[in-house]
Length: 135
Image (cartoon, rainbow, N blue to C red; front, top):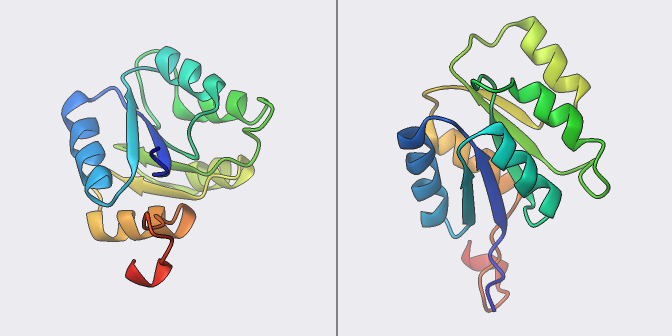
C-alpha cells in the first residue's frame, strides 16, 4: 500500500506542471496534475490530497477563487496551499494569500530547492520503514 503524501497541482501550462510533478515525485511524493480549474476543483472535492499547488492565473478562473471555494469544503479548510504564479507578487497578492491561509506564494520560475524545502516543511515524506532520520 502506497503511503506517500499526495499533492495536487492545478496548472494550465502542461510543461511547467510536468516539471514540478517530476521534481516532487523524485522527492517521494505522489502527484496528480489537474490541467484546469474545473478538473482541479473535482480533485479537491475528492479530498485525496494533503497539499495543493495552484497556479494563480488560469484561463477559466483565477487561483484565489479556487482557494476561496476550497476553504468552504468540509475537510479542506486547513489543507496547505502553495501558489505558483507568473504574476508579480505585490502587496495585494500577499494580503489575499494571507486572508485565505495560503502557506506560500512563489513567482515562476522559482528556486526549486527553496520551493521543495517549503513543500517538505508543510508535508514531510516519511520513509516506508518509518525512520524519519533518513530524510
